[in-house]
Length: 396
Image (cartoon, helix red, strand yellow):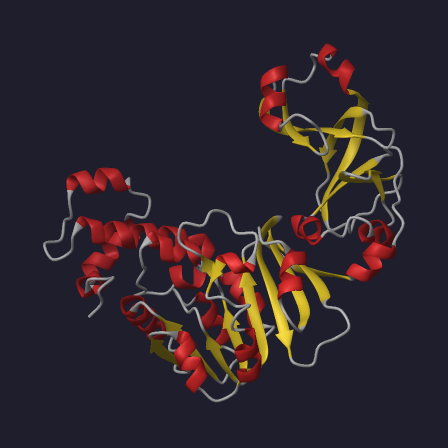
């Protein structure tokens, strides 16, 4: 049935074993062996690891019976359920072609909105596995295409949306440029725009946004997605009717809500830098805003000031409780040179911004244990002085 998954995995006894042993030590299980004669211990390990990871990353999968999981790498490369749902709000309601289907988390979300979704995947076994999972979700508007997605695209009619999630090429380290990924979206861009009203390109958070905008044509929107203050994805939305400049959206997703901050690069460039001495409150912007590079726009929008041109920390006398990021109340601050004389802090969360030592180096140098409610910011102020700020985080 499946090359990735032995169909015996779906037997009730095996499924019960998986559900009841999610916290089992995998290495001990491998040494002990499988309790099922028709299921190898390696096959069990793949399903146990997959379901365990699904609990937080894709809870709908975790809570649905009969779901099959692929090897670890395929699951690691897939979107999370929360980011997939965000992307589903960006697509049209017509037909969609996903050129890089993978484990299909995005396509399950797309299928809730699109008339028809084409899941393209070169790996036949993975395609069959995703098809099985779609049946478990009772999704009947996904078609599975096995083989080269580019060939399929060339023969297809025009659709509403093309979605592509290029991965880094083999033997390539960290990816900062689209040319280091496959499929080559730059090379195929004209074809994409001929075949779809809208093209959505997903990229890893390390990708350089300015370089991508220079390489791509007709980008109307850029979405920088963070989940619980961790940058997860970059999305470039392209359409044939190009606007004067792309709209930049920072999507700040946490467990309770999603906040969208919209900015403009032309406005950011035109703004004068506003910086000042440390005041009563300290602010650390969400990583999506830092990734987007809106270091000046944030001061205008939220009436805060920057500590230094190259210090991405902000301050204000009055509390700005809707600031998009972490908020702290300053307890005290001082010059770094005097800090070693202060032996009162043995445990703290150490943060460095525009400072020549890393947090681990500081903790080792001053024998500070990690954790607790105290925060220590090692930074540079508006007078180019190296400073230490002691603060406590405020709940939002």
